[in-house]
Structures are given as structure tokens and as C-alpha cells.
Length: 125
Image 1 (cartoon, rainbow, N blue to C red):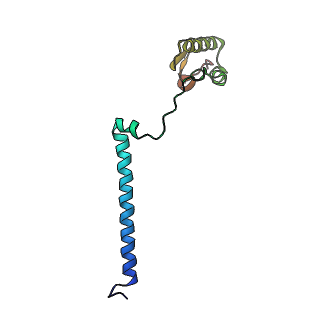
Image 2: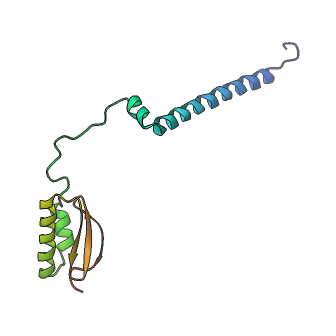
Image 3: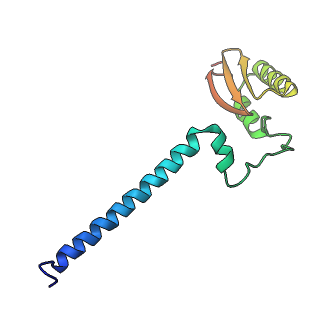
């Protein structure tokens, strides 16, 4: 025994120092993260890799896929099919990414060619 200091006391002291170091390290990480997202100029200065930019997007990235078009028209009346096809064609020709398709009895909300909302039933039932 070292002048009244037991092994348990030494172990407790070592454990307390280790826990203090871990707490300090975690606080530093948190401060770095807060600083990264708080200062808009620092974000661009501290980012490690450039953000990839797609200079030539695929031509159908905002258009409605054939499967989505089939899904929203599979039980529609012939009149509603004509309305839906025309509105989709017009929106895609205008390059719209978000639009509403209105038909007799309801509507569909479309964003990037995907249906994300709507009301009614195009089958007229």
C-alpha cells in the first residue's frame, strides 16, 4: 500500500480522469458540429468534399413514368383519361415539377412525376 492509498482509490481516480477526458472530447465534437451548421460561410470553408452537381440531368427526371401514368388512369373513365393525359402532357411540355391534375370528380397532386396526393375517383363511381 502506498501511504494509505489503496488500489481501489487509484482505480477510481484513473476512471474519473478517463471519464473527464471523454466528456471534454464529446463537448469539443458538439461545439464543432454547432459551429459547422451555425455559420453559413464556415460551412463552405469546412466541407471536406465538394457537393456533386449533376450538370446534365436525365431528361425524364421530372417527368411522369409510364407506371405512374398507368396507375392514375387504370380505372378512369374514357373522358377522364383524356383529361389526365392532356394535363400531364401540357405540364411536362412546360417543364413543371409540381402541378395538379383536375378531372371530373377529383384531382391528383403531382411532384417530380410522382403522385403525392389527391381526392376523388376518376372512374366516376
